[in-house]
Image (cartoon, rainbow, N blue to C red; front, side, top):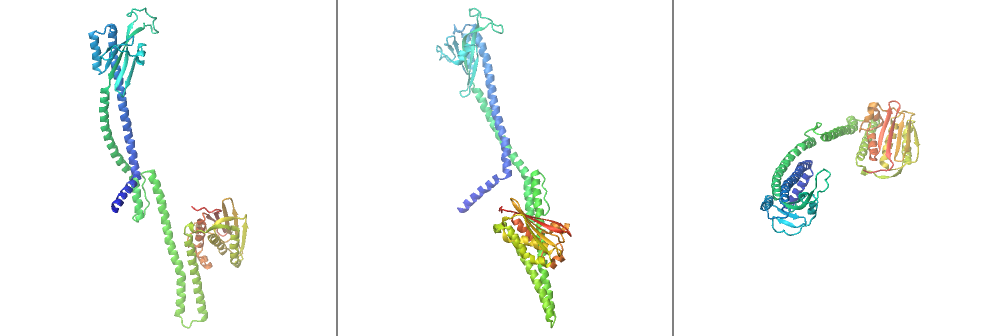
Length: 501
């Protein structure tokens, strides 16, 4: 039972997933765009046919009733309704159009009804009154499916035995309306034709719907095929079957996706190469002190009756190599901590002025060994939300590098300033400087501008990488300006208020 329920929900989820796909949405849009016009066209055709058929029926019947009205007037039918020829014509008109004809005199009395049920009755209606004034009327009752029209029975004033009236504006003598023909005509045949036409239109519409669904399905597959190729190509790269840049240029959208992916792929390759290089460098850096200690130890072991002085010298060298190994390991641990997310930051409000003063106080003994003057300039008091430990490590690395890679009797100047949003720290010196080709590499792990000098002063090539990571974790930025032989300046910019993303 549980497996059946699970299978049922899996089917629902798979269908919902399909409904979210671009292909399904394109399919639905194409079906709607294809089918809705057929609905509108069907409605328009039927509506136009009905209006046209009713209009023709009205025109046809009006012609017949006008002829018959003239016969009624010419034969003085209103005074003598027993004329067989006229009655036959009225009955023929009624039967021909499946309708009814009422003849009404000037007193609004029905003198003839082809149904024979209203003779002698009085009919007073708006249409009849208007017709006595010489205005023909016709109306279509769609619900009851009949047309009703009025036709005046007219005599000239001379034929009516009255004094002629003044001529009308067009110069003709006005005629006198002596009666009205009220004619009702069935439109059942029009309705029947509409139903037949509607049935055929429904069949045609169903065929068009089937065709629209089939074409929409095919077109939707064709339209999303480039995206499927993009997915397949990305999957091939993900699975390791392909490492080349992708190229699916069917649409501008796929070009944008592929361009972004290729840039990401390029970045991943750079990171992968950097990782491999980092592992190689770590192995080399850790192996070098061990190799030195191994050589020194083997030398001692190979010699008999080693003098105490030589023994002390070798052990001192081994201790130095151990210290070097320990420094590399500590820097690596610091770097690993910096690679973690910003959630590991211990943010608190810190007085940056006091922090820098404390850092410089700790490093002044190192500067004193080379007679380097350490200058601190604070433009204003600065308090910011930072991780004190990580920021201290970053600034210490910058100042210590400025001291170690400086010339004797030089200077190191640290400047602190701030605006309403950021505080800036500038660490500058007048030391050896950085070659132009090395500037873009100095923040890379284990990169050294002068390897021999770095090893001599005990550098591991990780200090600037640690500094950069610490500043980036604070949502800050670091830049460098340097000229070989003239000095270097590092610029640090960090927000006063820490905002986590």
